[in-house]
Length: 206
Image 1: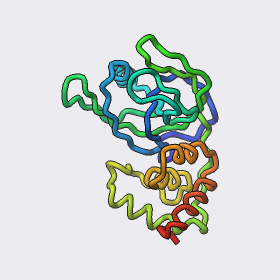
Image 2 (image 1 turned 135 degrees about the vertical axis):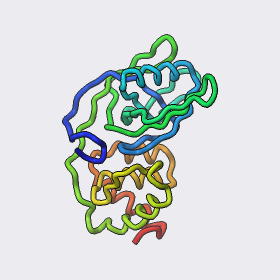
Image 3 (image 1 turned 90 degrees about the vertical axis):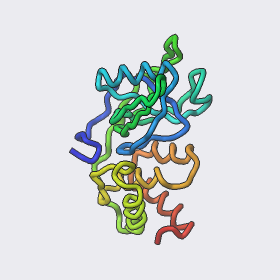
């Protein structure tokens, strides 16, 4: 088992509901969602009943509210960790990112909910953080300490290139589309190289 809570597997296809958003969810990451549209309230209820995930994708065109948005093809499974309804019709969710997926096909339900046949992407074998990118670790360790385990859940894996890359991508102040491109990379070492270059140019890391 690894920090995502599953053994690394090869690609496979499943059918899931989609929740297109203006942000990006990463494997092992935590996201808070405010749900109020009926289609997503129903989706969340079904997912909790079946203990099943839904898919979070960055919106390529359209908006979060109203007509179905067009999502980017690569997203992340969202597993519901906590749910609370502070008032009628408003559901607050805390979800954790699971495996990445690529959309194969989509269909829209009468209520506007998107469903998709998706290919779960195979997770790369664990790789150490290269010595050339060790300068990233003190920054990430400080941020992890500041955020606490609620926002950066344990177990922390500072020796795992994929985990380090995902956590850094969550916190760098770049546009969502740039984060999407980093999510789509299959090679954790390439992701670290890009992040190290970006942060070194801004003198945030050595």
